Image 1 (cartoon, one colour):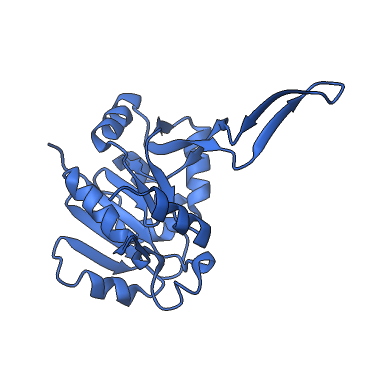
Image 2: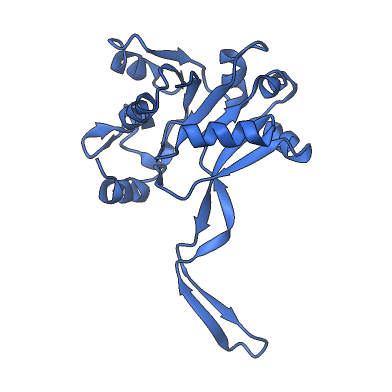
Length: 221
């Protein structure tokens, strides 16, 4: 058993999902009849995370209404701003180790393994990464432009950020120094204080109608 605070970032406008997000925030868009955010909350609770804060912005009142009967989920209006400003609003310098995840990403990351890897790394922060997969067929060609290898939608030798950040107290205490979350991550990287937890399981990010359709077909409820 372990205790961890979790912040779910839910402030974006979800423009690429319009018109679905014209009158509801993206985390409330349904996948197989259930809002995206409900899958995330269930996932956290199944792994013993109960102290959950939703950092809302766009149409935050809809999220407040959705969780009005759930005393274990706090919805805070963090406005229209960068991720770093949402975290500054919710975390002070004395905040405990915190899990930060995106409100549009579904995954089966093992949080016990994630925390263990983070602690073992002794880094200030950990980001969960997933192998980048091409959406195209990829050809290798030689100097004579002859195809020497072909792979359909291969897994590439790169990793993408899927959230599930673990921020230690030392990392949280430095948030005030940065104007953007990108600057924060760049600083951690330059100081070799950002650990990458490699996840190869389920990962579904819902940013567009195409990704929503993919989630509908791939998600196992």
